Length: 166
Image 1 (cartoon, rainbow, N blue to C red):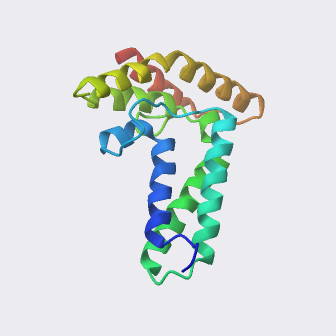
Image 2: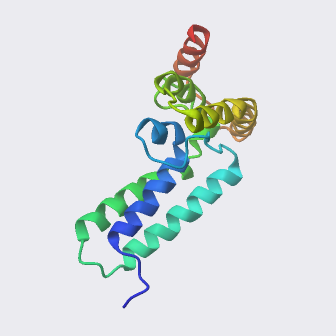
């Protein structure tokens, strides 16, 4: 018996990593365990996501599981996540709602309808995290600007218009 995770176990672990990256979408898609969360947009949060993704990618690459299709899907989505993290998009992405961290949160939130006491408590916990979420995101944007990673003017205009409508 091998201690090596199966392709299915790696896929499940990756799904949790992706749900950690996009907890509102996880709630929308009924993926349990993230209903109270907002994404940790801090650099440390990105490092933790990256470490988990690198671990999964390494295990998938070395896996002897015969399910090569699942392993290929895991490898593809892990590489995509690593590319997003390495681009440091949180530091300069002010775009239309489905892409940017802050505006995306505002576009997903109205689509969620908590049902039941625990779901309502989780929703309130998530809402209470908004001030810290946006403060950290603003810090990341400032760091990006200082490093020369600036958003596109059109994207800034769209984001401001969207927030104003919200």
